[in-house]
Length: 229
Image (cartoon, rainbow, N blue to C red; front, side, top):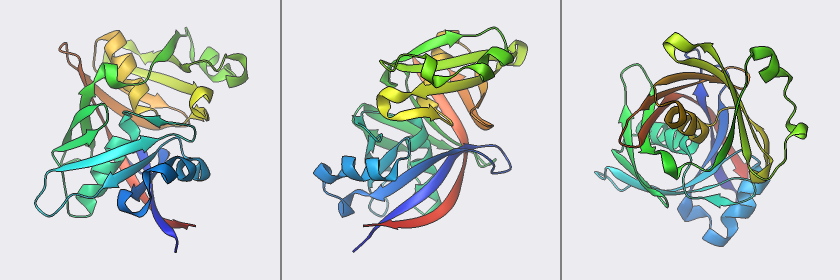
């Protein structure tokens, strides 16, 4: 019997374009030892396995896998899962992942946000570039794959708007379309709120806190359910 995988696009623009695919799976359908194999088979930058909350519960539990490894936290899957739970009639206030307790918020505009500690995000090497031309010309093959690489440049410093790309061959993701964890790291690095355009046009909004918390918010679109054997 096949396993249902809900496919979301997280961090779309306001019209539902672009965004980073995410697989959402009911954890009760897949044994823990089989989850990495399924994540590799799906090939999304992350797949999240959720213990569905019971009626009336405001907390859910989840684990996250890249195609290569399990990670304790990532923002793209936690934003996507939080949105999906509300769409299915079980909105949550908090999401427990191995790194800690993530705070969840929903806005009337349709944005879904999560707040987490900046240090929960995986380590990234941050590359400050001086132009969009340099950013677009960058080739993932020119960078060592020992650590994920986040390349960025300002598009409007006064409004906190920047353009970014992310290479993560070390996680099995040659180039990521939209990376919430990297958005957290760059927000903490610059110590200010940001509007980030990543990849082909995905959009991420962040809010910085001097106490070490970063809020990451974005739009999500449901692309339907796929069955995997």
